[in-house]
Length: 579
Image 1 (cartoon, rainbow, N blue to C red):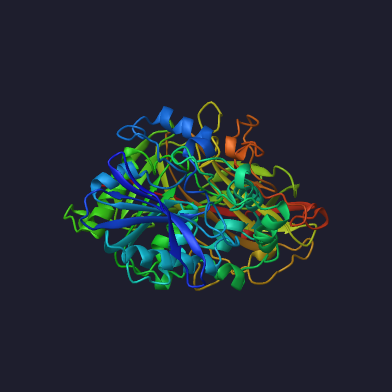
Image 2: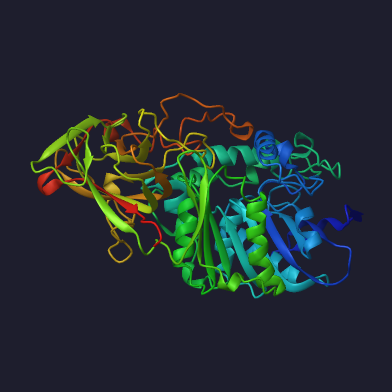
């Protein structure tokens, strides 16, 4: 276990951490050269602790440092890695950074089974190991993005004695609803993600993997296993997901147990994260049992604000307070911190006292058969029909007389029928400028993301009455309710939270589609780490699996009813200015 001093940090490479089943995980520990004990910031995940950010994700790195020079300022950037803190930004501030390769990835041996109970127990043991080290004060916090955030929700439910705080930065908390079955419709991102991580950093790739810029060692370990051995050492994760199309114990075992999360938490989401993390951050904040919890929501790319001065300053204030006892006013910080989006790509920073925002004026807009979206319902019953796997229909307001802010969750009540026994409904909340051009944003992944999205498979329309609200319907996803062809049913559809200030003269629209949203401008450039996935508006979060959406069940005609007793509508969160 080599130890050296680099860039004013004492660094220990490949530290073994014993698990309760005898396996040893490997960790790199960065800490101050001063022997005085410090709190620890920990990550444990699948991206190889020794793989430099720029080597694994070159497009993302280049964009990050060119557009946000504050990210690379004040650091040599030698130790930058994907979705974890830069130790050069933390060790001088009195923290140790512990990077663990999760079981089966990087330099840690074992069998890969993403997000399973075995990995959660591993993280528990790593937390307790760090707390017992002579260089640690006994306080450990978790700070990281995506995988490193999702596992925070999981392990916090086990209540490790020395877990002092968590910062789940853009992380799913409900496996079924957030991650893999949006409204009951399979999200194909599972294939893209698993294929990439196992091909590039699975332990045993040996010299087929990259080498660390710092140590020169192979980032996936020195062992070289055959393709057959590698396959044996990993679960069929995409197959497991497909084998559980309803919200059963498999999904529940991987989801947060909010009632057991009592640790101080800062849940940080991304407005552009529809299709993956945003819902998890909001639901985690709202439902966790912790009495010391905060919600922050920002914009830009998935990897950006975690590393900017804005993000690091926020993380430091929170962690300094709870891990180092600094009286910096964080305990008086309002619980909701928002970067409200503007249509020109800017932000207005604001705090609020609760989520949803208490002064929200929930405003219902009604769909009309001529494509209008209006505050009054149509007096007569009408309908709009479209090809069930097609682009659907769009309902648009008149030009807004005044500027309005939409911040919060939205929901649609649609009365629908199908010529088959099912229908997938893809809802897109949109805005158009006075010239008719759509307003899109840099999303967490895709550069042309609409202002809001929601999904529902009509056969999954069963609601949990106790957990549903008017603005956030909650579906049980526990049994199918097939349609009778031609019969009209009522559906309540969750549209994930959004935030945007829409100027006067602009229009708001709702598209009801039979497939994923696609921006009219065609494909945008894909990212190096998602080269096989062109950016068309939803990034890698597509829903077009032919087994999940067979044409004989989903390829008919969908009809949306309007007016009368079947007045389909959209509920929007209109937030008035502060008095």
